[in-house]
Amino acid sequence: MATAAPPGTALFLKRWLRRPFTMGAVVPSGRLLAHAMAETTVTAIGERAGAVIELGAGTGEVTKALLSTGIEPSRLALVERDSELAAFLRRHFPGPRIVEGDAADLPRLLASNGIDRVAAAVSSLPLLSLPSEVVEGIVRGVFAVLPPGGALVQFTYGPRPPVPRALREQLGLAGSSGRRIWRNVPPAVVWTFRKPVAA
Ligand SMILES: C[S@@+](CC[C@H](N)C(=O)[O-])C[C@H]1O[C@@H](n2cnc3c(N)ncnc32)[C@H](O)[C@@H]1O
Image 1 (cartoon, helix red, strand yellow):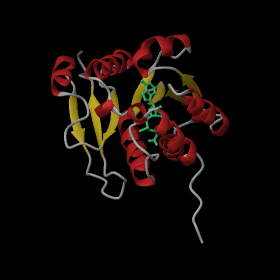
Image 2 (image 1 turned 120 degrees about the horizontal axis):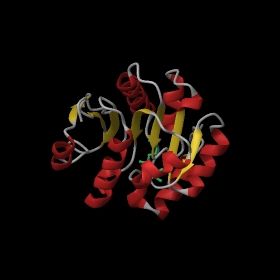
Image 3 (image 1 turned 180 degrees about the horizontal axis):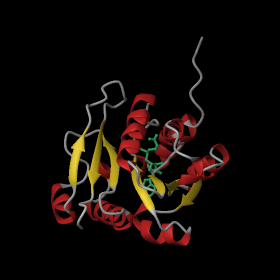
């Protein structure tokens, strides 16, 4: 008997066919990767108060894992640029705030949604397939809203850190990675980039 695809998979594929470079993957993140992202995010949050910002929420695979770790839905803000995916998130995740917009505009998006305190950011944005100036804008925006010591959690399929070295050095970021998750398709690594305490 055929196994039914999880909800959202067909929509994800449809949006990938439309925008392969901004989707970055053909299928949503697998369960193991989503859980690794969520657990790394919980560690990154530590005792910090404030919102947890998820960038590129897609069909919510990482969102589900974040919620399952016990992060309060009202603390989560899901940033998604694709309006069909944002509508899907609104239907399936009534608790978190859905922020429809471009992650490159993060400080303004958060301000206009009344979010003035951020504990951590977790991103599934396809940084490897975006132009370098777009990546720089997104990463600078994320670290502009994170507090000193705050962290961005980001996965990558590539062999190198998903935040380019020059940018890490300019922002003084410390990067660390987990083990490669071979059972994800494609295999992926979760990175944490931390803002210096005295920035
Ligand atoms: C690889 S998918 C990840 C989806 C989901 N988080 C997962 O792990 O299955 C990347 C997502 O980022 C979104 N995205 C790409 N560029 C974006 C941007 N500049 N701002 C906000 N979302 C963006 C895409 O629409 C897509 O939903």
